[in-house]
Amino acid sequence: MRLLAALPLPALHALGRTFAFLAYRVFPYRPKVVRENLSLAFPGLDDAGLRALTRDYYRGYGDVMVEIVKSASIEPAELARRMRFTNLPALQAPLEAGTPVVLVAAHQCNWEWILLALSLQLGHPLDAAYKPLTDAWADREMLALRSRFGARMVAVDDMMRDLIARRRQPRVIALVADQEPVASERRHWTRFLNRDTAFFMGPEVISRTLRHPVFFIAIKRTGRGFYEVSFEPLWMPGDDSPPGITERFARRVERQIHEGPADWPWSHKRWRLAPPVLEGGAAMPENPPP
Image (cartoon, rainbow, N blue to C red; front, side, top):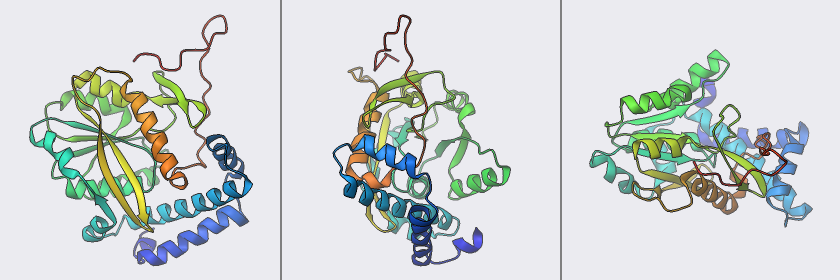
């Protein structure tokens, strides 16, 4: 992995395109999952449109995978050139006033580079939630990579306890929150990409309990290996108007996916959970209160 990381990024992108071709044409990687997810999310696309979007997905995902490998050796100046923050002062203002901030993101584009670039440019402590990997080597390497520029990684099971213990320290708490909450009993159900979908309620619980402002990390690809990030207020203390934070997050993620459909992980088995059914066969309300 370290030998690969030493290669220049154009060479890695060429390698990523080779991997993408193999995964799409030669040894298809989860083709049925990708096809089903895209067909349901974009029912208006014909076969040609679905094929083109599928091809672009594999190409973009191949690029992201080799870019994550490059994270082990990329220089700070190069990372700052490739991951541009358009309104970082909007995030820094509450921190300088002594208020911790919650950041929520989706698995869109290169989410790993967001953490690394923000660690370099934020100027304040950055804590990020992570789920430990089952393989000890992979877990160790990913922790080293993600904390390379100073981010502090906190296991999800320890996050709430850590937040309460350090609730008065101005810092950013970052969470990637569009995964399926398989192991969580507290879920928010809503319509997302034309399907009943469960979301984690972690950001909502944190913000409602500790009254920390919440920002959404909006990202878009501007070129091969280049991204633009902005921070959008999702919830501020005192804002009790509906919908809740989790529903706002779901709607913003959905809009971001429609704006860049090839940049979300369609090969992931996102919809394994079935919506709960109340006694008597009635469906559970789509958006239960937190």
